[in-house]
Length: 202
Image 1 (tube, rainbow, N blue to C red):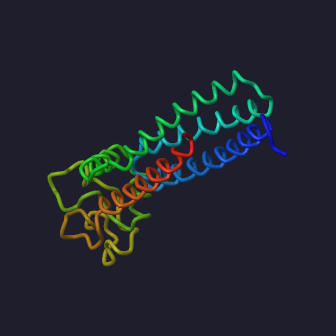
Image 2: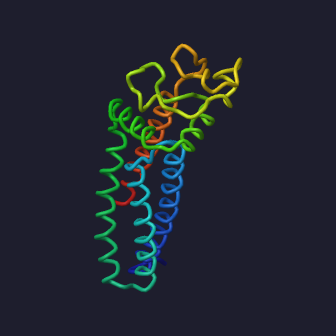
Image 3: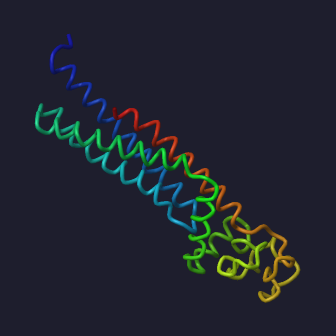
């Protein structure tokens, strides 16, 4: 028979094991979304990672408190878990509420602040060249490392000075479109998962 604190203890242990699994899932998904953006660190996604790390820590505290029937620890656990829920819910909503202008601004700033090695990685990964080759006034964003090594960009030349240095010379797309698409998917995925799992913490 299950009665009294035994049922509560077993339920709390099972719930905290679930929270540990959820924390690892959220860390993995958010880290993957952050890595795939390549040129920019998504601070909102980093917020989800921070929440997941705190959730992992507080779940371990909950496991210890439940197994030892430690009332003070369990009270502390409930308070912190509720705070994590509020933060995680807010960050998840912010991820889902990102609009196109904010997304474009984050991507453009990420490209401007990135070094040539990161830009080269982005160009090779997305098979693109430069950030926005269609707007010559955006001089900082147009600056890019050589695209000669990307087969689709300049198949007929190996001269860097002739490869994608003017809008009409480039045969491949600029990097702004794929970078923004990956960022949007990352925000939606992390926001959706964060929102879903935040309600398991209530």
